[in-house]
Image (cartoon, rainbow, N blue to C red):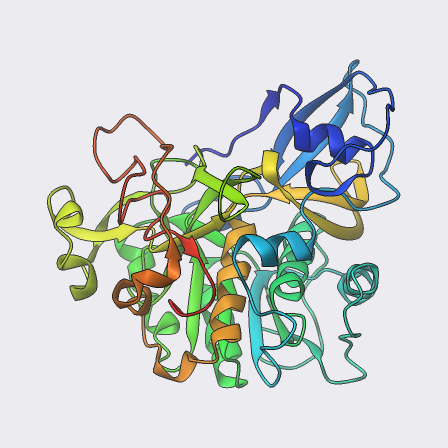
Length: 404
């Protein structure tokens, strides 16, 4: 699988980011400096049997290639904008629910960084001291935590911030796997499930293979909604998104659009993972759809989706320096989408009835159908968005919580 690193032309959202204006608004007649942008994966491509995180940093550079000055205030999409885009009842729902986050290695500043993010956007404190936030190792205990890792720290900060953005009343359990091996990560999913969470987000992926499919038992937890990012490599299937026991979460480009009744438009993000697993059997809830069975005899990815394009990225706070960056950053990747969908399940309060990725397939009226964009030129719905189900965006993005 590849991970995209490319230089980009400046966009309206990116200009706004430079000026410290959220979500693409422009204030006054400020001069725009000479900038370029690149999208840089936080994690390197993994070896067989291991996983890479699916976070992508939307990095601002000077025209000479030097790193831009650190941002002193957030840019990218804020929680209120994500809540608006997906019609989420974030102010009133989610109390008493816990969202689990599974990642590899330790983020040494996660608790303090989460406090900065939540304070910035006016959310109640979520700390270890008040019982809202817990960090444990893959054995389920708070010490010893794994070795520190700055690249996975970006992923961890992104994940806990997106749970806060979508479900500020939810509690958060972070389980840090000893390494990025699929075995350690699967063990950590079991640990999260055993510690009483309602939903678990997995923003990482490894090679779809016969060996990885043997980890399925770790993702099979009826009564817990488990999500997995579809990856950032376009027309390629990752594991655990390929598991039939998870909701595979694809990615979109999310744009504010005053001319739309919704106020937003979305298209398939070109790098969102999609396709047909060569190793996982097709679940019954996909076999009922002719545009899946026509092109795929196995498990098709994705099921649902949310914002993932780094060019329409989200605000994240991470003070663990990596890639010459720290503080307020902008991230994309299907790592954004997975915790947003896990939190939407928590907001719905319906996870006791969830036992795999099937629920949205019988509740499609609660989805925003995404009908444009593609991840490849494969010539069919596995890589091209269209009405109903398609590979890059699945059934679409949340319109409230009724599909979850």
